[in-house]
Image (tube, rainbow, N blue to C red; front, side):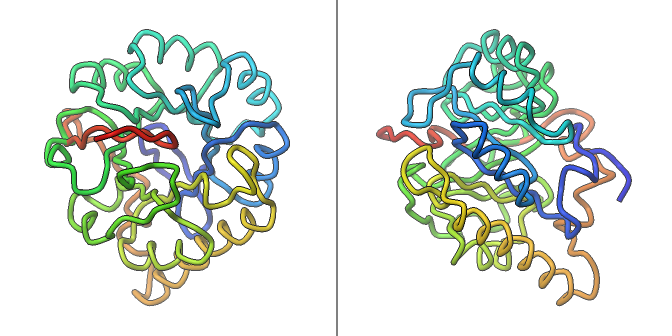
Length: 260
């Protein structure tokens, strides 16, 4: 496992190859705690939300994180220029677009960001067009992100190469393992499922979630006799393809709610 995917290297994921993102980080203490417990990435929300952060505050937190930490800025229907301005100013390694961003705007951002995640609600009609958006990864979420509500995982089956799939939406320490076993995604993403209150992470839940995710990934790999395709193939290939094509999903804020 020595390649790069969208600017991601072997140090960015666990030994078993599953990418674990802890989103909705609001304090330096929680960011360091997540990283110290084995999270691959931490996410900061820059859209209206109980977890919304000011760029200057996030910049101070990012400076104190280990260099290898994948820092992700979560935006919703922000102007492409502003997304890149914030990402470059802070030094974010990735951006996540969680609104109704157009194909053109998403491609513009993706061509300038380290790597890009485009999020859509499960079952949305535009997921079939994801390859047009130019993003490296597709994040599939529930209809009411941040609500802690699960979606039917069958809606995420076969929508994309699992090596480019990140699953979110109602994940918790007690169900993340089942999600990994069912969908074998490249990564998992959680916010409310590891919180004591909105924006405040619970150390116990955080530890249990990360451990459960890595345990499930190891079990999937062991069951197949080797690293599963979802994990082994995640490095050393270009998930976006050489032409930058993909598919899209549709509206779906990350931890704020809006009528679809």
